[in-house]
Image (cartoon, rainbow, N blue to C red; front, side):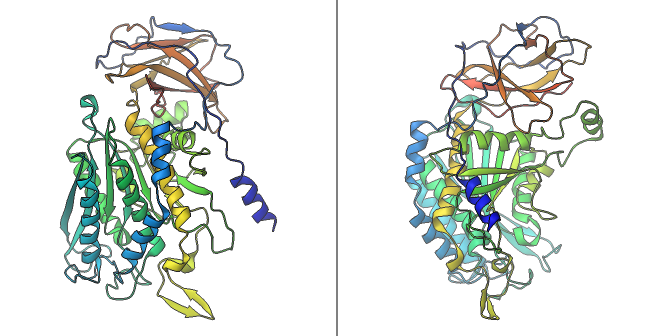
Length: 489
């Protein structure tokens, strides 16, 4: 009883306060020079910055609120019901049967995305990204694995190679991963995530965004993350600048196996130490800290700031893990490929009777991942969290590049970074917190200082880098912010 009360109190405590940039800032020149090791010059700021100033839990802009209001739980329900109707979507099931199996689900998803594309004024394009997977983990025979990929192309030339990816996996399984014939409805795992992605594509494709957004339904997740690994590998080979990736996996129920009901919270899993951290990077991290300041953690903090508010009616619970305990999901291949800003959305309390199970009744209890256990309103709200975050990312400025902190002995802290080439850049903010705080607590608007040696340089007087963590983010003329970048020596 106490646990339920605590959950209810936590869900009701969502903050909705907004924030504005504290000083007027003007656009400036942009060049692409690498940051150097010379700390000289730069704009100086006094170290007495008061008790706050970080704009957490911002209400979204009016256009984003309109999009949130267009998300329809009835559409979510129809999509999940349709995916369940294919009987099984196991990666090893039929690819040619028009009514049952993963091939029928693939074709329906392609048609749905194509329908949205027809109403997008040419902004949304759809493709089938398939390949033949040789026998490997979970794949006993050569098997075609196909992702259904819809790309909403951005309108800002300077952001032509900047991408944000959101995915769910449309394959399902029963008790045995390699059983391609058993009933595997997969209503929650992961028709719920795919339905959220479909609804995002339907709503967002009607609007222009600065950067590109990829809406994707992947296959082969249950076997070994094959579909997402294929996409991430091809993206790296094409040198796509993927600055954020979300997978939505098991986002369909507000009631856990323990009976706890929490319809207003979604977990966001974000790793600390990067999956592909090099030995040199590890040595630096051990020397200066930053275990809690990976790009994935900065992305999670960004989501909490822009998507936890009265408009989404959701609490974003950051979990400081790459995924659930000893488990994985489709964001991991992106992390492995060096796309470090990747994270996973999952419902707050899972029910293991409703995932990876043969459909049956056992001791009077219904087992299986069935439609009747999905909360469509909850899934729609999770889609809203994704939408608020994606809109803020794709319409906001790119993250500052090559952000560095000088290693010289000083009572001040010197920061420098490459200037942005975003055409609507207004300036930058330096954020900071004490080393024991989990989230950024203070903001210092630094404007757009005159470049010195082709770099932006800022000095924070009487703020020792021994005692604080710092970050830098860009701000555009509409007040949109980028995720924070944690500086390295």
